[in-house]
Amino acid sequence: MEVSSALEKMPSVRGRLAVWLIEIIIQVFAFCLLILWIGHEDRPIGLSDIVVGCYVVLYIFGLSGYLITTLLVRVFLTGQNPWLPSIWLTALFLIHFEVLNRLILPGGVAGLRDRTVIRLIGACITFLTTFAGPIALRRWRKSEKSLQSLF
Image: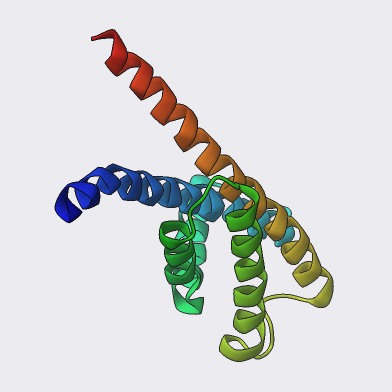
């Protein structure tokens, strides 16, 4: 019985991992655009700026431990309440941003005003992506079950 229950939970874990990966991709792209917007100069932003910016944001997410902690929260913190993981993940973003500012880059990532903007908009980006992910997964599972019942 234990093996069959573990096998039944596998699609759930794979689904949560897929949602986490999509959330991270969206967050990396959104944070890249935010940082490019904050550091905007008089020249237009090109595709190479976006690619390099996404790479830098992904590197910073990995360096600060954000990727690992969000993965653990996404996989292990489950339930019917979509608010709880979103609140935890938003708090993790703020904690990791402070770790990045105070320990990894002692001078800070940007000026005080820019850090405040990154905190506020970053918390919104994190909350929205982590709140929408599980809802999309539930809807996908419902539509998948309804398609299976047709056949």
